[in-house]
Length: 416
Image 1 (cartoon, rainbow, N blue to C red):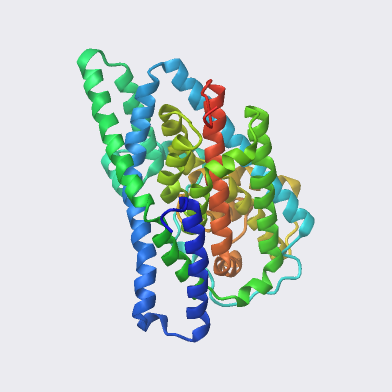
Image 2 (cartoon, helix red, strand yellow):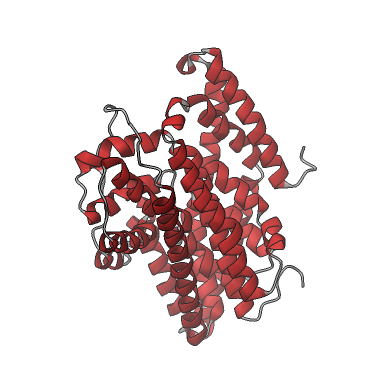
């Protein structure tokens, strides 16, 4: 199996995990007492912990080396503008797709949901406004931000430090540049070792997902799931490839082949942040994007570019309104569009973060948490496959953004 390419190894591991998880699900085994189940699922937990362990040092060193390597302040500003413009544009496309499909299909009409197992909204901490997100970008303590996984704060500090290094002269600049570049290479080597364990980790993750997921709820909200899946499919198979082709004149299939390992990892881990090491490796080695571009664009993308999450949040709130029998006005739907965009920027790159952040959007429209808690509790019960799909959409958008921006900077891609 080691002779196969990584994405084939991951896909085979996913298939084996589905079979093993199904056996646990239907055999009536008490999962809490099964040592075999505990061992297999521990493999997935260990893999995710290894990926998360490397996220902070990878983001920190990659951004510093990327920004300090750019050197030119004008080029840095140009890359920043292009990156933000791309991310905002693709997120808005995704939101409009979600809004349109949910209004056309109306998956919430006639849905009868249970009145128990509600979702506790009181335990959530949600950013309240765009200004609050901007303020949160500046960390009071960069070390604390790194320890807490505050990616927006960490990215801001790393960009600031990298830009400051470019302003130094002589040996101070060369010593710092050399130090961070060497550290980045060491972190990338660690990342490569962890990535080789991906098939084993995916086996554990998929086994746990299949073994613990109930299938009763899927029939009740089947049209809702189909609506979200259709929207995500349109975005990843039509919108993103079209943007990619128009801006690079390269066959999108070439890019998808280059990103196969990252897409498979994103689907199995449901975490944009955890997939970042694999995404960076694929973009640099398979797509040919330079280190300075990928190190700047991708860490930002894993934090602020959540196309799949934005589409999901917008469609999810419309679905909730339909279940409650509330007819939203165009003004309220416009509020959803803007709030979903901001919520997707603030969402963490972790499993089911989009479902957590959906409370921001429901509050912006004026829904009471008590009214939507039961519905969101049901959405959570069937969220895992949707979360896996939208994470794959998120990292695909990130990687296409890196390739598009690299092409606009005159870089030669895909060994051309």
